Image 1 (cartoon, rainbow, N blue to C red):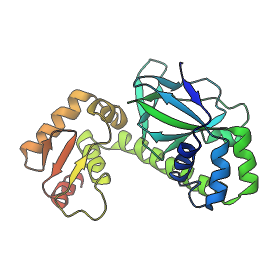
Image 2 (cartoon, rainbow, N blue to C red):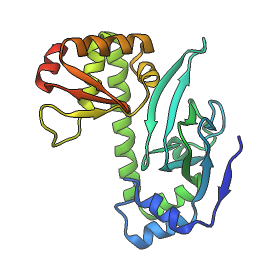
Image 3 (tube, rainbow, N blue to C red):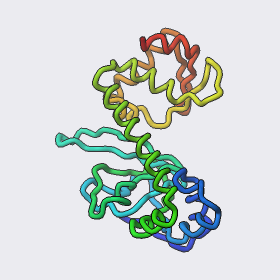
Length: 235
């Protein structure tokens, strides 16, 4: 993996630290201190951040760009776990478990800038600022809940219900009953995330459009014609 590491972009590190929920509740001077131990990784689109079975010894924070986390089964089938956007992070298990290894793969979906903080530094900050641990526990708990929900949906719900639920979950708060949703990932990644195929995703979107429930727009945008009516199809 070719990575351009830069440890002197202090201002960029501060901005990166301030964007993360587990740090941005701290005082400015405390965030500045944490930023001093951060390094920067620049990844090109398609470049791998880490692979399964590699040592997990750092926290990675997305500063700009986008990274997808995915798992490969023994048969080589790919399962999307989640998409990381600016302000998101991964590698939290490394903080608590020395010698832990990655269970998934991480790939840059576009040119991406990442802040990296080594385990030793993070553990020092956890001792100095216990509130970080509480925030971290909260974030990890939310991820576990999302993971359990995803597993349950794939196991018991049909594909159409999964798609409708996904669209509803990505409606921004404050929108009216006819919102426009921007898909946070490609249809290929959406298919992997929902446990189906890209062909099925395309077919189901077309079916929902033919029923007048949605309208497919350019740039991964989906217009929901009537959210309440759409949700009735999950009952």
